[in-house]
Image (cartoon, rainbow over all chains, first blue to last red; front, side):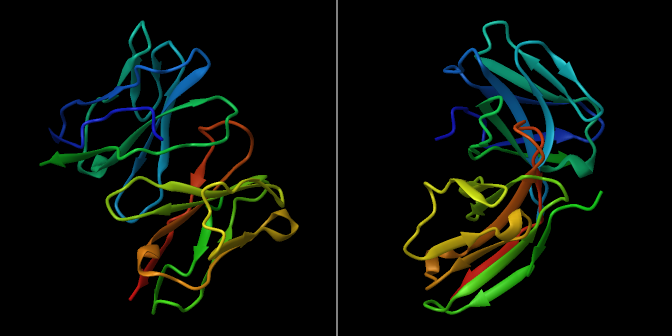
Length: 110
Length: 114
């Protein structure tokens, strides 16, 4: 079973920052937080991952709380193409198994 | 690089019929996964291969589902006989190494069982 809790849906205006929360209160010390997204009619796509430090790449930023029990994925300037289901996944590095929950359906509005 | 190729893109069959899906992973990716995604849910892992060996098939309904990965490259997933509840998107993914961020998914095969 998935070890994360995410809101089922969120809305965000185009051009604004989209902040997607994820709770993972039972995360273990060797487990990373991964984010994937799934655009309609496509397979999931990797976005970003982190252990305890905040991470940033060309797609998004990941903010992990100090106690590691929750995290936030930030899309700094959301576009209509960011409309998708976003999955927060907790897994040990090398576990080679991604267990997907229900995710958050993010809708970017013009 | 070329992505993960899957075919067919869509398939409609009657219950009790059989069906097969094909996956061609990214060249050099040793690990291959089949996921089932029922409408409105997240993908569920069915089976994981490392080269041509099965690593995890604990979630595969073995009475009707089978999968193989000959020569450690292409893979096929078969359902025989199909049930109505098998209607779903079947996703194939591959990864180069042990990292969970290295997954590349195909676009999937949408199966409708009527």
